[in-house]
Image 1 (cartoon, rainbow, N blue to C red):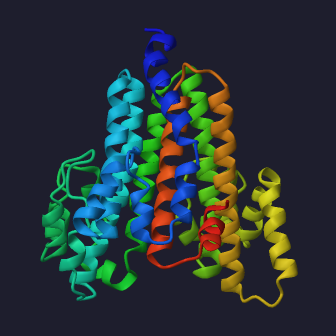
Image 2: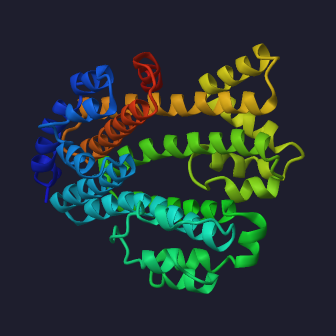
Length: 365
């Protein structure tokens, strides 16, 4: 089949939805609403009508967020069903990222109970427990009486292999950070394989988008963990994602076996992402009154903002380019998740009584 026949129907359908989504009038009305209840009322008749119904039934913002997660999963599955096998398989890999995050939440809940001895019964009702990509016994994981029982709940999934490299003793002494990093690395490995299954323009688009995505995440890792946690070169090697330009150059230049790995990594960042490097240098040069942690946090916000803007530019370019590629599908997912993120921020702001100006500031409006 040709790319035109593969993508003509789905892209026409998604472009029509994108046109509606880019209208900010709904969010503007919600931000201006004097209360959370009145903000929810603005969803009447919108594509988020189901969230209004959940709120009317429960009055519980966390139940609304659980419904948003279910809607996101349904969105991926719907688009997956429109595509031929290869791009459909790639969408399944992207959906697996939502499952990885859900698995982390489940393991955190089990950890709170089994290791920290905190009450979790009220929190377990806010966990998504239906199948996403793999069949998982979520209740069995949350209520596991031992680490072996926890691992057994993930039998037959890729997560069982990751969990097999840890024990209750290592998790109790080191926390969940190493396990969560291992889950992230597992998924990025699946993403890399998924990109390699694509061909032609689809592969070029996916590589361009996710190489930058991984690079920015690695810059965040370098910034966050080198200063906040003072990780050794061997620890940095464990947390950095082995994918993308920065990881490739770090390997080529032996950055993580050098006497000053951060200096080498900073040089790589400076060469390929000069805008970020210059901004970080400016923060450290002009903000002498800040503590290292505060500087670090400002850098993280800066990088996350840059990542968001870079993504927007990439997806705008895609929407103006070849209509018969996976690009429009990826742009649609990005815009949907961005819209949902804005919606969460508005509802959260209303819940906590933030001013209209504060909410707009958080959304970058």
